[in-house]
Image (tube, rainbow, N blue to C red; front, side):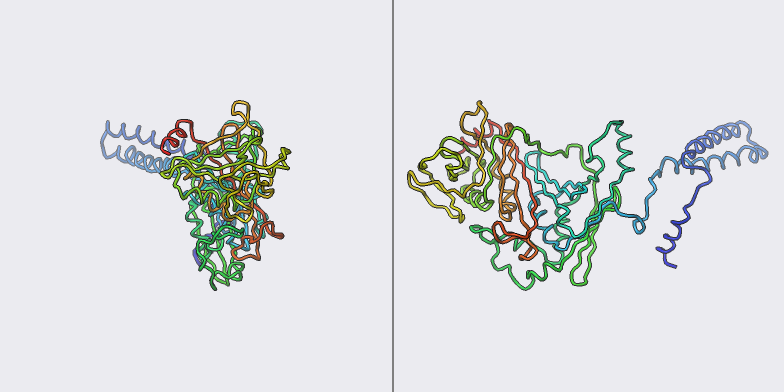
Length: 463
């Protein structure tokens, strides 16, 4: 009989101690106290008779008392279930591991990420210095099977410890832990899954970073035959990832850590949104890439609903002075009518840049939604500065996304929400056509804290 069979057989007949766990501390303390008392009496009357009557009982009382105290205090652990027989809290199977890799790689700018398992999907959060945060949500629709059994007993214990008798939110019942995001990405590409196909564009105007990456090892057949199974058995247990491809299975277990109390989302006031722009993500990616050539320190976002430039991105603080990319918006949607004024540079619908003459007609397809409502303290134009190096950390999401929603609130917090359409029939699982049908749509959200006024002034002085 193997050791595993012995262990499974023993689990049916658990050992019950002679003294209950709750009484071991009292019994151990009483025996140690009795041993101390008998040792004192033996020291006062040291004889052969006292050895039998006092010394031996004192030794036995001290030995058993120490054992019970160690069991009660020193090695107090919660009884663990055998994982082979226990039903996991979470189990999901994906038929395309590259989907998961593509989405998680978008927020792979930090080594660790906070994971929260919910009935609707898995939420990954990565943040750095409380100034940038990336949120990737793996919806349950991305998996062929998704099973979630909330750990109600653990949630009740947490509520009792916190002394909160009121009805708590649903999130308190969902497992929340920290894992190594870099290790997870390395695990997902064990069988050669990489972002070669994802780093290129499925939208016109974004060039592939590695054009020679297409080979027999990146064929769609290989990518589609790779499956991934995620399992989380209980609180504190590792996150198990099993990859399967053409009969070969690899299982990796990632250590989970308790999240810090400071791991909270960067707040975005959804009821105080002053700017909302929806456009093709490829246009934003091209603009940031072009501005990055001047090596700026800050990115300035300028938007106005009444006068030009209606929407502009500027790189300030770099060694090559200031550069600006201005976008044309559909003037008919704004109801202003008439021609446009001179623009330094305009990104067309195909992603290329070209200059426009005065009083030319505004391009109607640059933005799908353009809403700007600045507060009275800002006047008619919204201007906000952000760290350019942090904005560039969202470049991977810009490259693979179809659309982007640019939102900003009164406090200056910037949200870049990317819509990524995943297609099982496309190489690498990323949709290659804008607005293609039949794909699975998911979102990746980046949030940025604005630069303070003194930091923005320093960037302008450097320029």
